[in-house]
Amino acid sequence: MEKKHRHVLYYALDVSHDALYANLCDLHKQFAASPHVRIAGLCGTYSDCAEWLADSPPLPVSTVTFLWLGNSVANMTQDDASSLMGRLRAACAKTSVDCNFLISADGCQMEHRIRRAYDPAHGPSKMFFFHGLHHANRLLGPVTFKEEEWAAIPEWNKEENELRYYYAPRRDVRLEIGDLSIAVKKDEMIHYFMSGKWSETQMGSIARSAGLRIDKSWKDVHHEYGEYYFDIIT
Image: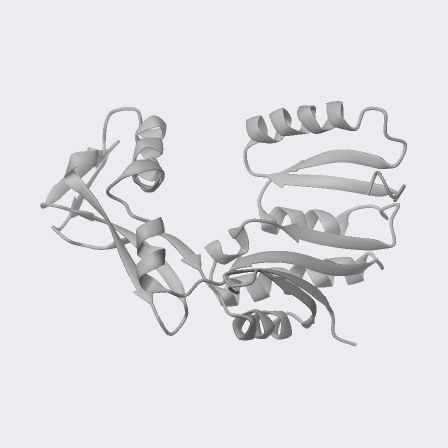
């Protein structure tokens, strides 16, 4: 955008104030001399963003593009993704600006490859999947969750093309949290994480439910990763 001299007001959205501040500082340094690219931050959730946009003073732009990179849109259910996009579209309409969406999504649906990539027993994936327990311990103070007492269990939903992960205790445990005493049975499943590997058909359905349509798409040669441009249905 800078090289093409396009005027852009970029808002970075994150729930972590520290991460947002650190990354905005880096971006400001990169574009300090730019007369075309302006950068700001929004600290909050996707829902907070929709509310802010609906109630904000008129923005100095004619079009808002929502940019989702990686596969983060598929960490929510398809219904939730459609609902959120619908809310964002409605917020834009309320402030009289056009909107579109540029969304990345995993498309690999080979179960053995997906399970290998999200293996909870080894390497970075193990650290990632048990991060929730470690973070809960930091918030709660004492070591409420002992990693050796819990398993991270994957389930692949072939119909929805979604990988879902659960925590389950390896034995009966009792969690003492403040005045609460919570019993969890051995192998009792507690949903923790999901990652969709959605097809173009599914992405089209998500778009239509939000009042949008796929206008363009780009994929790798194996159709394992895609970029989708959603526009408003007219």
